[in-house]
View 1 (cartoon, one colour):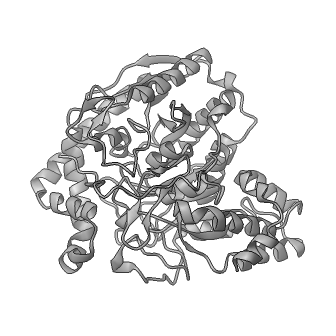
View 2 (cartoon, helix red, strand yellow):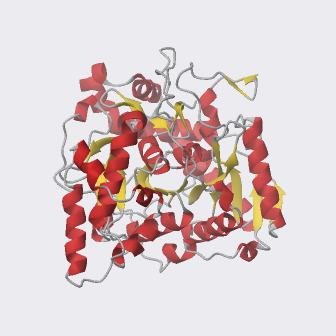
View 3 (cartoon, rainbow, N blue to C red):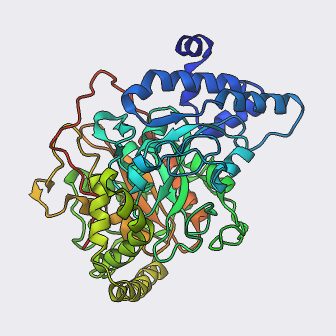
Length: 505
């Protein structure tokens, strides 16, 4: 099959195109969906053995592409994602395609139905290329599991792709697909977007209807599904397809008439940002350890935004209760989802997941209730800040992607830290509020590693976040690049490397 794919792939440059451009080309019959699929599969064949971003290919991908071509040949109107290959994180159900959640427990599970978000992508013309790797049950910031192994970062194959949507991040940055689906609880879309130089958004809970799921009411801090892509335009295009209510998800939001595709679509005029009020925080009042180069790039982005006419004020709110909020709310979710699995399958669970489940066992009802009360007070502090500013900007992560061929770092910026994973709290800080939050590229370190700027917007207004991101991207297109993957550079993962999972107490 490999030689057939290579001989039939007509144009490997296809893999550099955005989802929006590919959809237009397929719709105009400038290229067939089959040609797109073949070029994409050839890229997967060449690069994925090193990146390990896609864990299960869709054996029917070419058939799905042929169906797109037949539909268009029959005179049907073009759809928004006509013939666009997408990857789907391996904790999202895909009909007829193995969905393991990165766990030995579900290693051979094949769903009989699509998740709503996948069904909506298919209905919009997308071709499911395959499943992207995830840590077990999507609960780590490094993507590795005992079923498929470790995913690597295409910017440096000896660094992490992040997590828990690291497979999607690596696949999209590595040109295995122009866009894909991730999920986000405490930062699992924004972290790999930052590490891989992508745009990715955590929508407001309920914006993308979530079904099937064990919990129709995702009590406390919600898991959400959302898009990741190489351009802001593609994120808006996919979110427009994904968004909308469905009675199978009782938390889904009613339609607000927001046009996410239009908000992100070019040409975008950076001059439109003049007068935008931005609240900037680098380390969230000392909460987050931040690498000097990350700080420099985020401050550079703030200066660039000021040069475009934005009013940038360095300020933040009291977040001294965040650790207690995360401990109670996250612990509740861990106990709800995994206690029964823990009792039956702990011998095959990964250490990062076990560590988080066992830490959560210290949570009692009183701690959960207090966490939720504190979160209410916390929300009003964030709300007050957004009454004075249009957006909040921070680093998406406090440091660039860490190495896999060395032990997990115990310092940030040359200073020892008690918990290295505190670099990810910039993301979790806003997960607990339910506000739309997006990571967008803002530059590269001296080692050529991408760094993300987190943009947090008003409640239920992903369109405003996308509009802001599109205009900043138009002013600084140099931040949007694709890596040359060095396939020969990969070293073994260091035996001393051990991720503890994100534990906050």
